[in-house]
Amino acid sequence: MSNYNVKSMKAEEFISDAEIRETLEYAEANKNNVELIDSILEKAKPQKTATGYVCAGLTHREASVLLACDIPEKVDEIFKIAEDIKLKFYGNRIVMFAPLYLSNYCVNGCVYCPYHLKNKTIARRKLTQEEVKAEVIALQDMGHKRLAIEAGEDPKNNPIEYILECINTIYSVNHKNGAIRRVNVNIAATTVENYRKLRDAGIGTYILFQETYHKESYLQLHPTGPKHDYAYHTEAMDRAMEGGIDDVGLGVLFGLELYKYEFAGLLMHAEHLEAVHGVGPHTISVPRLKKADDINPDDFDNGIDDDTFAKITACIRLAVPYTGIIISTRESQEVRSRLLNCGVSQVSGASRTSVGGYTEAERPHDTEQFDVSDQRTLDEVVRWLMENGHIPSFCTACYREGRTGDRFMSLCKSGQIVNCCHPNALMTLTEFLVDYASDETKEIGYKLIEKELSRITNPKVLEIAKDNIENIKNSNRRDFRF
Image 1 (cartoon, rainbow, N blue to C red):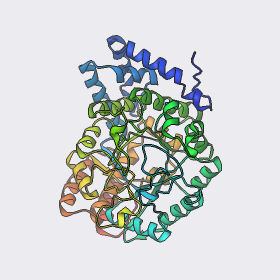
Image 2 (cartoon, rainbow, N blue to C red; image 1 turned 30 degrees about the vertical axis):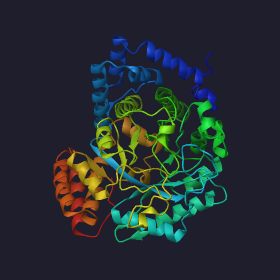
Image 3 (cartoon, helix red, strand yellow; image 1 turned 60 degrees about the vertical axis):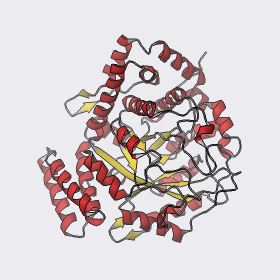
């Protein structure tokens, strides 16, 4: 008997183990049911309206049927629809960001993370405010405008006051033409009061990975420390939204538990946020377990291959069409290239997962949270994206214009967000080209911008975008936005 209730505020009711198991049984029983699969695929397709396109999305049960389906032509259709949804709502834009590790002090015992308390081989480090400034300048000198700050959970070394001070420092640093315009925050589950403080500090998205929705596994993987509390962790997004944070980001660490279970739980969490708060997750991240200081992924027996990983990503895009899907430098260039055609809309570039890593000439490994597979420079990543027909976007306008939460989603769902995002992407790309790019990247970039300007159909928007781009090129003016 399932105790499932999408609107419940109790973790074990909106993420019901019985409901997930019933879903997986249903998916397995129907994975070759062509009539049902066709109806689900038809539901997932973007539908044209007077203002643009809309998508119905899929329930966790419908999406689980597609994930289980192994009929080759139907799997091909899943990928085609995923790419179509991404292009209809986000265009060919790919948002750029970088993680910034503030501290690797941690009191938790997570068995898959090298920051766990019992690890005595990893060097412990916490940035001073001067070191935060130096890291930010190094990131600005690459061209980054959006950061995701990361810190271990340690009430003594990394209290909320330290996090808030770091956010204030990051926003205060203006170096040459550089400025970090948006700080997203990935820190441990906390209180409504602390979420209010983060909101008041002007953060963008609050990100928290569930790691696993399987409660029994969760308790084994988090044997000690505050993170051991499954309910407190799983209910964190509700507290964040109660604290006034509009945009939240979900994610699981694929490889810890059976992927079909995690997939269903992830979508149930998204459905819960939509049902209770009227807006689903702003982003969904899809990290896979990777090697780190004292962590060997082979010790975990639920790893997924690249084909399965791509299919999961595509099915998430069909199920939650309006969310941003994030792929990090945990993955290789080859895998990232593939997933960009499966619905991914955000990527990190030139990431260093060590505390203080950006100011070092050589990539340090002694404080890394995980091995970075894609070690290219930001310039190389930007050029690669453009060569593959994508627009690298450094835009943060929606946050700063108040287009967050349900306001962003309503614009996205009506197809109107492209009127802001497309020209904003071209203007911020121009900033990158003028201020930071190599000559080769500039040449490719300016050609791409000319081509993309011709796709703007609104004459007024086109005129303003062209004027702003000329101003960026020929004067020292920056930060134009629609």
